[in-house]
Image (tube, rainbow, N blue to C red):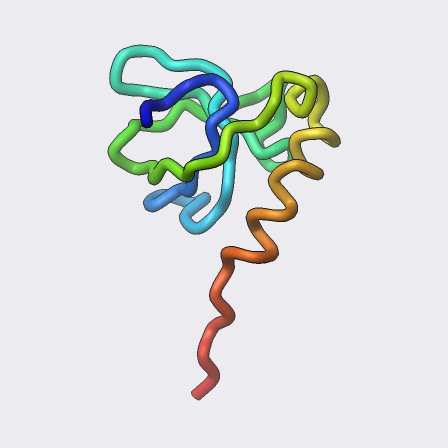
Length: 88
């Protein structure tokens, strides 16, 4: 699978490490990503592909019309895939 518009990715590096994002556009070895909250549609993040991990999910184009729709679509990923920190 390749970085296509709507693909759900996991950030492996940077300030947004561990966060789920969707791909808005590709540009050579970089992709533009957003999560609808910190990185909105109006201000997407340009990130190197090597700092992202692809998931098997791709959002439908209807889920990418607004920041709220993106947040709602990505909410299921962040809740089921996060591993709780061990206390100790």
